[in-house]
Length: 304
Image 1 (cartoon, rainbow, N blue to C red):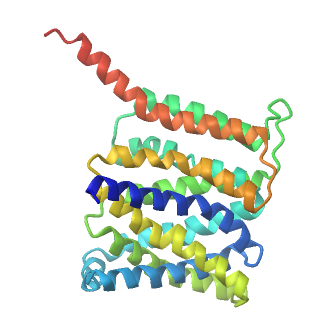
Image 2 (cartoon, helix red, strand yellow):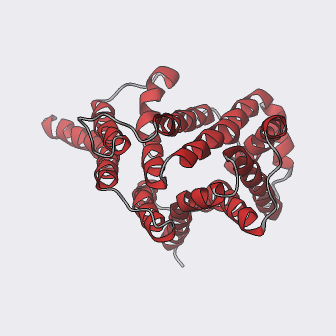
């Protein structure tokens, strides 16, 4: 199989698995509290990533990368998995899966906006346009299309879902300073974050149930939201001839996720969700297309 074909195979595999996790979140949260689910999923992910690194013969890199930047991994471990997944799972606990999924997906819009003050990047008109369109979609979803009534089904859930986008964006901004192996870095973040999760769990709640259905759902989240799927995506990007051709597959994820939510969870998908998600996807497309259109116009004006 050609490298480009392998890239698409790995990429499509990652997209398919990521498309199922919103449904898995709700199934797992029927048995666990958000903090208990974080504990089960992170423990599973640590085991999976550790096994992958053993197979790749990269275990010595764990000590090497941690000793080089322990403060860095303390930051990333606090952001992800501890704070990010705790907030995200709580949002899913309070909201219908279709709403939590759509709202969380706006992290890709927030990331370039935060990069301006935190990384010193320039603010582009395309980013502002995309943000305006995306957050119109957010408002539409949050109010279920009742724009005049201005009533939210769960204001706390909406706030948590949007906070998760802030935490995820901050995690990736912090990670721009990381030059180490990405799988090792992810494992280190989880290893550093686990003691915070365990401490919070022991201080506030009981240990999670070992019921087979509950455990299966939690393990699934750990494998296919946090662990294995991340590695599949990295392989896809590495094998791709053009990164952009693989990256655009991400646009399929929320659409497929809505399908799984309707099929498995039997949620009635609101018209407002379709409209709001459509606006968010339009915003992501504009974020990619508008700068290219601007560059094309600039080149066209340059005399030969």
